[in-house]
Amino acid sequence: MANLITPPHLATSASIGRELRTAIADLYQVNPAVGLGRFFSLGAATLAGLAFAWSSESWWSFGLGCSFAGLTYSFWIICNHDAAHRTLTGWNWFDAIAPRLISWPILVPHGTYAAIHSLHHAWNAVDLRDPERIQRTSAEYEQASGLQRWAARHQWVLNALVLGITGLILKTVRSGLRNRDQCPQVQQQVLLDIAGMVVMQGGILLTLLLSHVSAHIWLRYAVMLLLLERIMSLVIQGRDYLEHYGRWQKQDSHLLTQLYGTRNIKTYGIVNWLMGGLPHHSIHHAFPGIAFNQLPLAQARVEAVLRDRHYPPIPQGPGYLKTSWQMMRQGLQLIPQESSK
Image 1: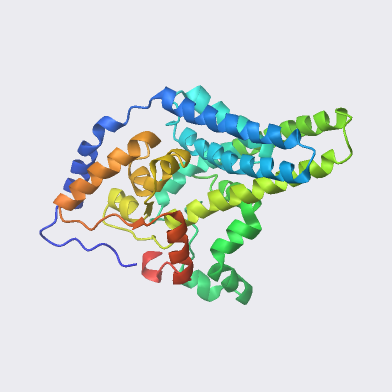
Image 2: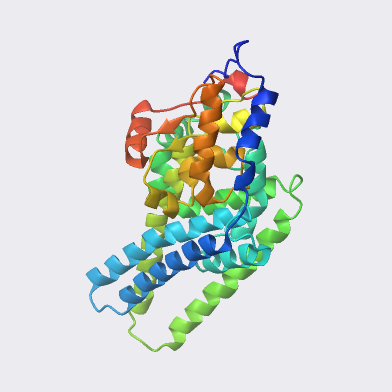
């Protein structure tokens, strides 16, 4: 967890920063067709899974359709991350409206998340107020109760399998309200999210009420929400944990902090497409204006510059499953006291 040491023969942080920015300067162009293709294809797959589920008489078929929809819905919701950075399509109106329309039906407060996400990029591995910080400091652990220490030691399993998306939603709203001084628009976004979720859920429930179908429809609706929430929790909470846990390492510039304060995941092209470029997470943190489809090329260029200047390689996990296993075996990791000041 020690800070990166910069020997005298290495380029200074200012000069390496200039070289890195020059290397990726031509990669900021957002192609709307690429983002729209990903958004609507994942949306179509999700709706197809739900249609299959609701047209099935068998509970097994219903569960299978909902499970498939839960997986594709997870990747569909990840499109909202690109939209928060306005790199999904580059169209401000679409990147502002579309994410809300797919988030509110499952009670995800996209507006609140988008409002405070910029603070995460500014404060990651720098400021403990980071609204998306997942790692505790050594002081926090020492002052915690026995139950809180147990929760810290089993954080990944607790978040992904127990608290789930519900816990992530509550954390987002709480973090937003705590940071409203730094992000004045967040209070308005919380209210807008609540209103949107009430309207959409009310519309769905009213439609079911007026449909005059089997009484089992309410049980099916509850099972559907449970399956969607559980599967989405594994994907979304899991990737967040792998990208950030154990990487709180402040360097001598913000750019280097973002490169070395997050973790990339080695994976296949189709997984990178589904994940919206998030396997190249350190590159995204360093250059958040680059669209997901350009991140693999940006990583190759950044790594070439760092290698030429004798900097250490960017941290990279050997795939989502292998990295998960490695990190669970490593156990508890805390932010050292000197790094939390």
